[in-house]
Image (tube, rainbow, N blue to C red; front, side, top):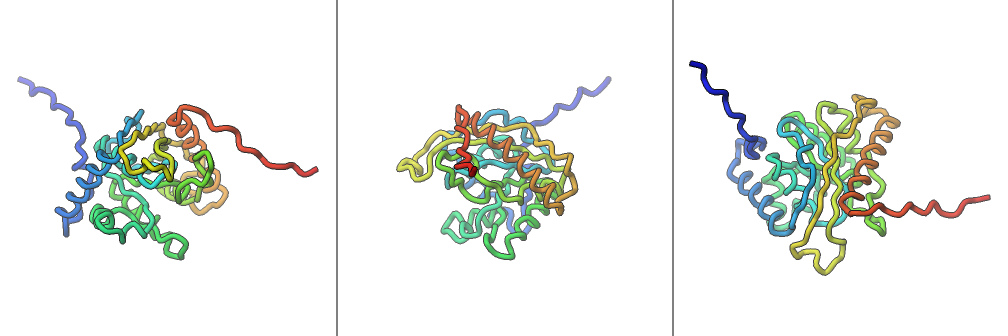
Length: 246
């Protein structure tokens, strides 16, 4: 008699977490804090989350509008049974409670404006090598554009992606509260639209080539812009090129 076919178990988020052996309880508590915070702060609506791979390394890139949307992005990732490792400005790690959660959950600090800023990409690379998910905002900070469109990007996301072509780059466009709104810390709706992996195969392995890195950055940001427009429900107005000499 043949045995019945084994049921394919649905991947669980705890299976995807890299739990530090020295303090697993703290890490689990921190993870629960992130998941709970995301649920409390936002009403998250996401589309096409199936583009997030169930296993293996992945790089998730998104536009950056406000201080709280990281929780929404975390909710998206955890809602698809993965644990996010965000590249976050180092100052956050010194905040009460939040800093403890970030450190315990093995998030990645970015020491901006110093020679040590590159250490965050080294830590992100090690996270990918463990088969985990890295999340980052290519802009490096919140957008300064008046209409909140994605602004100029730094090259860190592209360099990380080109150095690790086995990790798909998953673009996300998100739209929600406006920075400075009096309702910023009230529970509000955030819409996230996930895109298909960005094809960077033309520049794979060329993370030290400035031209390749810049080209890959432009492709990544173009995808994020289109997805942000979808999440926003409308296209952005064309940018004014300014006066033309002549």
